[in-house]
Image (cartoon, rainbow, N blue to C red; front, side):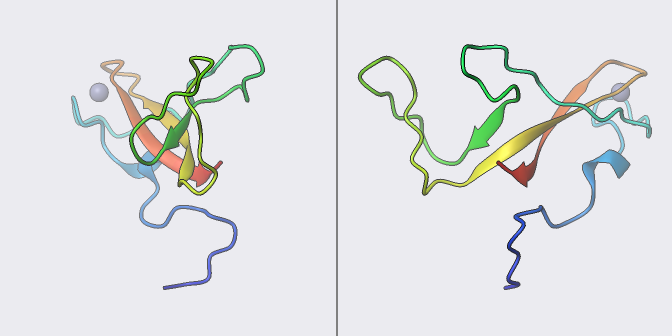
Length: 88
Ligand SMILES: [Zn+2]
């Protein structure tokens, strides 16, 4: 185990992968925007099952693993591939 305090992912950069749908190699980097009220502006992936609060919103336990979602677009077939990137 390394002492990785910036929370970056390990492993190969998803940008260098081929499109899983058509095999093209030049995926476009991007993310999914969240325009909701008081949102952070981007979507996050949260480990574990969803837990609903009393106000009808999902409750986020800060002990969960939380990651930004990276969305890579294939310019050839328009397939969208989702990956987790930096911890959010
Ligand atoms: Zn493709």
